[in-house]
Image (cartoon, rainbow, N blue to C red; front, top):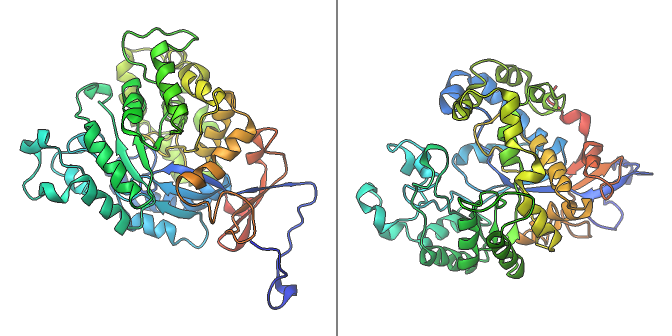
Length: 438
């Protein structure tokens, strides 16, 4: 971007009339997983390669359709796929944090087959407590925090992603977690390269750990209070104390409210009829989601609800404001809020690329954040956290031209991001209509 006249033949320049409209920086989704098809496992992908390729061809355009001109993959599990998306002629700027620093046999490694989990997470952290179950081909000195961070740096990563997760569903409370000393080593190794430490944390225990080790950001809201704490409208004192410490210490807070909403939406009969889905998903994939096979994950989840109807499950799921009281609290306390949609957060079809981010914007506003807070979280604050502020996050001479032109005012309502008319990215302008899947 600049203020000088175009070089060369000015008559060849594209002039965009923004009269009566609104311009914002392009949005940054700070939590995506690009090499995963929502709602599919590997066996589904293997059985439907043409559908999978249609999805990946559309994916870059789908992020642009809802204004996400920059995306950050926090855990690269398929480098070739990510590089193909990065090279797309029409698509967002793609950054990544390399392969995450998963604890050996902890989350998310434990959810993969034992025979392949170490190949899927080659940047794992060695844990002496797990020595007997770590294959001998992985020497401990090659899986220290320092060695793992060096691999992230060598691959061009812009953050260090780690986890504190004791498990959920049938593994709840059973997974090993890193020690505070190990995580501080990862933090310090990253800081030597000016990379922030982002911690997967959604429980009271995990957020308390984030404060203890001095993480730079928590990349989930605090929605799991643990047993023995009261429900109701007011937050338990123990939860408020941890949230206050995060605010006081400047730990950035990424709500990712769509993690839970994307599960609840499986039981909403109206979701697959949402017309927005046809704008971001190939028709053949959308049709598959409506089949019995395409609803496999919903069926799997439903077994945990003892035969309840979809309607009753939705009632139990509660509202966004009920699930995310902690997010409303920290936003009111002036926390440093950053934006990430965690697309997809699970094998749910209710986390579609681009649209899931828009729904996250809407839910953040519903949780009490002002539209200005939401916009700043998805632009300037993300750019600052990830070290991208010299090029992205605001509109200023010398920065990358990553811009949105909207019909409605985004400082009035986040609904404005469904009124985008033009997206400017990678030196070219695109009409929103030209980016739709169907």
